[in-house]
Image 1 (cartoon, helix red, strand yellow):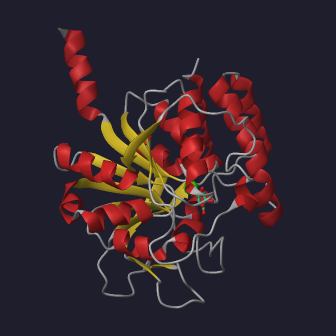
Image 2 (tube, protein in one colour; image 1 turned 180 degrees about the vertical axis):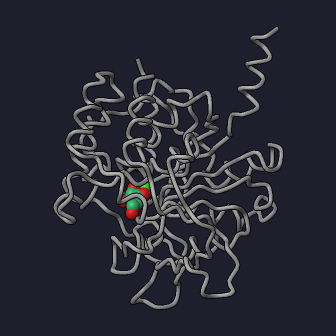
Length: 325
Ligand code: BDR
Ligand code: CA
């Protein structure tokens, strides 16, 4: 009796999520973190989008993470091969040729679903009760925006969107003004930031504070299971680019800030702000104009996260990767 009450309670408090991603080592770590947290997160499926590398590699990489997590049953979908308007930009210079350099690439056991990612997002939102699904985009926002355009009735059914994208104080990492995910598909980002549903945005202001230092990678490696070793290997490769660029000890673990926030929001601090995306000027294309000091009359449309407890964040990641036994 007590056990079934506890189970029911657990189910009730679990958040149903869809992760839309472009793995990318940091997307990959985010997937491992989410799949290691089944008590809190009901991961309904993983949708992939062209971004860090072309789509065929992103969907393959997501499936490889499901293999490593022992979740070959996880539905993985391929989505859009290019942004809505602009030509695709990829980031092999950061992530390597495969997108997840650092791990061994084999043909994944986890199958690719036939349905298009955009249709999976639409169908799932229409099937489930309104206000029960959180979207977690960690790549360009093409799939999410196209789902909203193809079936506008889904928008009000979205519980919230927790995304990695944008930059304010940090400036851009792709151009002086723009963060990579927003730069790749600024038009999609414009649609999403305009959608009217609650958005929590993890921009570079916060992700640049959660660095995968040598000491943290060593502790991850010490865990000793496949998922943790894959994480340490990927981060060893991934950090070299940002380390050189910024002169930091380690690289920023951008995308896992999304799932970490869902798991332990108390690790982060943010402020409700208006965020508008530049889609006209080529010079500042993809800039996220964050009205942090309320100097316009534009209403707040996002919770802009600016601060993280980096030690707490890595503690959470390590504790969850331990679950892979
Ligand atoms: C974002 O761009 C990609 O390179 C990362 O995966 C992350 O989502 C950081 O700007
Ligand atoms: Ca990403």
